[in-house]
Image (cartoon, one colour):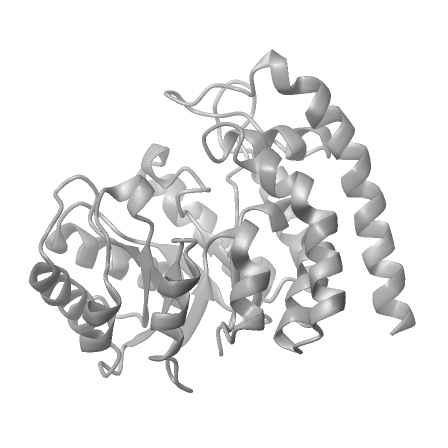
Length: 302
């Protein structure tokens, strides 16, 4: 399966007492399929992967595989703080039925660029899944540079990158490396429209958890280079871009999902959305419902 368009980095639903909410997980998966999402990420950073035990990790993947039934790609977060653990987690995801491994740069240890090349090659060689590189230095303290990516694109099992840096110069440098077997995906909702208009293959999004139809429309317009319409859709999404960054991810998006009827508990050290932002969450819940309905009507009309 190709990696392109609107891909959702799924939040993991928990009950109020901290257990997996598997009913909400199934409903969230179905909502994504019905909303036109073109790929999902299970157990990424938005999915609170660090808070999952092995059995929960396996369960989430297995239910996703069963529910999706081959209709869209399933990426699973497998990046750990060292290479051997990342290989083991990638094999675990492969055994559970994942289609791709989303492998973030090792957090906290801050390897050199040569170390990153060796790390990603080893995971691609031994993990048993096609690898999508993931660069989010604001979370990891480690920046995967374009010249390093250039050393990795020729590996047959390294098939793309999720780039969460927002600078247009960074995206331009990566787009120069793009090819049919190596996808360049934005990992930054607020700048994804610009990235796709410049040639990026799609977006791995936080916001599409709550707004799958609206983000699918954004991706379709931007990837079709309908600049005015894409920028208008992005403008309608700007309040959500701002809100989803108001506290640590996935706190704000889970607040919106909770208002939509999905299990939205969090595990420590994450806490629920601050009371100071509750009114904005209530307001955006109503706006989201209207925007989803509008995106559906316009898609049908088209």
